[in-house]
Image 1 (cartoon, rainbow, N blue to C red):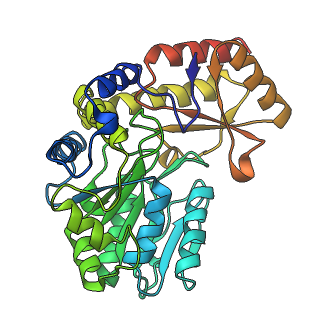
Image 2 (tube, rainbow, N blue to C red; image 1 turned 45 degrees about the vertical axis):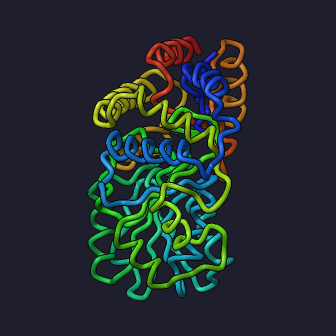
Length: 351
């Protein structure tokens, strides 16, 4: 049985052994203020930086999810408003969350085949918020697009914040070209849901310290002060941090993973363009996601194919938001082996 649902996604098979080891080693009841836990945090942060090419002077914090990161950024880095560029449901939800805390926040929706124009960024935004890989629409902003937005933010003084939930750990990102990156581990890290990663540049930390917002348990200033000692502001998900560390130790560096996923994505897009009753949702190759393949078709046909695939041991991801009934989504995540995609293509060839 292979699951191609883009989150929570299929976990690495080795997670079963990691869970047993965590139990045997006493991690399920390990105190989170002790030296053993702080050593685990130190090691995990070090592996994240080494394996994902995160700059050494960036800080990494543990949260419950990417959704919590939305809230932290609105609370701790936004004095008046944030500006959001989005083309799917998750980017729009981020804007909705921000407006609850900072009502003057605004946004601009762009098309699936478009790249957002940096000139849209207003001069008075505290944050500019983008979803680098929009899971709901299977779109992706390439390095050049992110760089152009970052250069505009440098001119206006805004911090560029990037939701990389379905790409972090799967593709190589140029972290130095944004001030904040965040994600959850239930996608490209091949782990169960329940842990988020918030990655902040020195510039973002300086802004947080300047604003000094301390009204919440997860205020960024408090998170930073605790992480100086490799601790958290709250009782953390120790098991999830342990599992993340184990996965990182066993995985290849991000450069190799990135190349593998890009090559596999190219094969998948070519296959579905040539051999399938469904067509890619995103027509522009430059805005197609590497890690989430979106296909469109008639609702009745989509439901039929999902049912047949499940009977064949293949769980396909359904659409999301406005595309819920007219699209399929197929995760191209590192935890899924190549043999899974061979079976997937054989299944679609027979349809």
